Image (cartoon, rainbow, N blue to C red; front, side):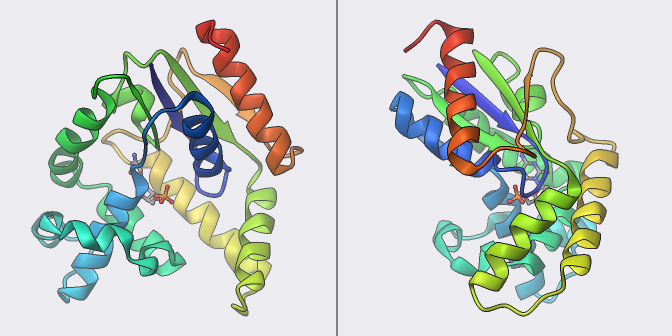
Length: 208
Ligand code: DC
């Protein structure tokens, strides 16, 4: 079974994808990490994330980078969003994601274009969303909890800018697939969101 989980930043899609993978016993790929690795590598090489040439040159990052905590930072998230608009970068990362999706037994992948581009034949597609204000609040709580001093308004601005870039790009923009099940987590806590997603997948695929 292939489960595609797409949605904007801080919507809860990563948490949901991980929980679905554990519940249904499937391997999970956070595809955002691949774009984050390219974003990090381009910056480390002194390149410009907005340059398609620099960004493509950073696609040969070492796999060890995927485990580096630095990929989780807001700064690297911004670089990732910028490199992800280049078609050559998306093309370079395609095969790896496609192979993961097609592995025997199935998989859960989360990202922006899993249901539309990477695995359009997925057995079930979820599109996880939440209001910008709520996503900013979650990100702010998480960051201040880690001791990072940041203003809520600044996070809200960043998230809105990231949404605009991810949804507005020409190649594989963030959009719900026609046949995606949309789950709005604005008024859900973590557990309720996970429960809703498990129920949606179980109902849609007839699996327990
Ligand atoms: O999910 P994330 O915040 O880790 O993703 C970081 C950026 O990577 C996101 O702003 C856009 C890009 N991305 C993408 O274009 N396609 C994906 N499948 C996953 C991420």
